[in-house]
Length: 414
Image (cartoon, rainbow, N blue to C red; front, side, top):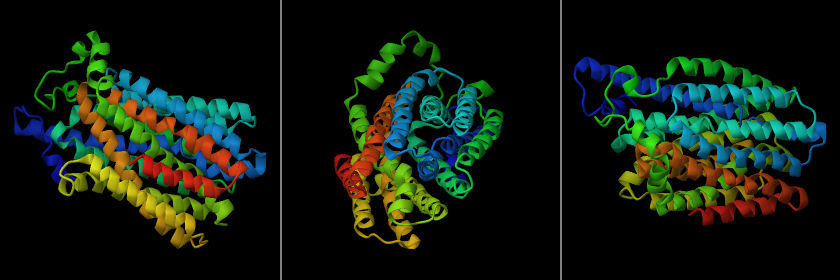
């Protein structure tokens, strides 16, 4: 990490002291955004572990739980795109911290509710404000790190997804058997404390600290403000490659969120695994995803000559094979379940990382958050399939059809 960041200096720096200060802030921004975005997962993916207990104690069926997931995901996708346009021009420090506080508040409201309609409303609202997490991170990465190093830095930053999801499913695996409502109260409290730390640690741009911009050019925010529509049309909407990335992202997220959202329920109900153990098993899926993300940039550059599309094909084939083994080998062994899911997690998070990096690079720092938001819109639109779709298939047919759907998605996403 240190050797990587030592190379990430602005192209125009007046003194060695200024270079040292710049490197310090790069490390601080990277570490802070990893922590901050991980906490968004604390108040997003806690529902997946609470669902089996909610189903058992409140009589909520899988169709309804699937609708919670779909409403949350679709609104999050639209919000991520809308907030991407806004975040390109907002102060990322306050934008991100404020969004985390709002999401934590809706988690408290969800945990205090007993009406299915109220829960659905609060979880959907949480999905909208979750869209204030990723866009400011994209803005910060593209303003603090040069394009030539962005892929390497973003592959490290991307571990925030798996850190947050992995830790919260383990935590909630122990909280849910006590009281499923604790799965929302405890992560929300942690998120609010983290939001305060985030506000203290972040700074928006190098220029806000009197440092030169990464590329040695003046900030073009005024130009962006006067021609927002033209910038988006030229850098995002008129680029066919960004649309192709979005299409692929849809199917990547069907698999990713299908396993993450329904994994604890499947392991408990179909494999007879205790919920605390199921939490650790899904956490293993996420932990292996960290290795998949970090390796994806290296493999793309060193093995596939920078051709990310070929790397994504390799990763999706590997994920499909692992999920097929998991489906056809109905073992109750936690070790076997975790091992096979680790392989699937490693492979699915490679494309998840590469697609976001490619979109940000294609749009440049002037529209990076908006481009990432557009591909994210496709990704979270997939919850119509991974949320309600999977819930409906399992409630009315079987888990076998759900895993067939995951397998077909790995093919389509390739």
